[in-house]
Image (cartoon, rainbow, N blue to C red):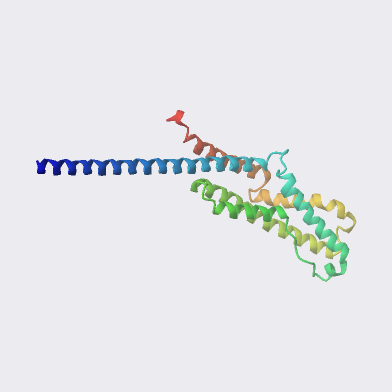
Length: 213
């Protein structure tokens, strides 16, 4: 009788232990599924936002369009050079201008890329595509801008273009954009690359569509 009782007790405790282990594993699996679901939701939300950001630069009605950011800040930088010249023309003639300004939109784009580099909710392939695209643009635009502005400052120092300061923005921009075309970073080239990345995002999002499984 004692043996039967002991065996029953042992069996009871074994069953309890098994139930406890199964319950723990089930709870852990449920928690991990919840975390995993939330993580992927964050990724999907982030990719949707990225797609909209990529498109907004080429949407003429967007406040962050090419004309409202890159072009406008470029014009503002030319205006600064003009104002610096009007304030201290003798300094320009001595070849000692106050420096070459850079459009604020270029700097903002660099801050944007730096943020993308460490964003944990962007898949690696898409992150790399965005960084390669945007960093190359920044490098090309920075170099082209410096070259055009330095040349313009030298010409002002020689007394050139003085009578057309208000109109100089247009032809300087055209020369700047011509440099971008040579490096395949013009408006249309940038738009094409942005669209290709948006297609990558679309493919990634479609991989989570249960109807396609």
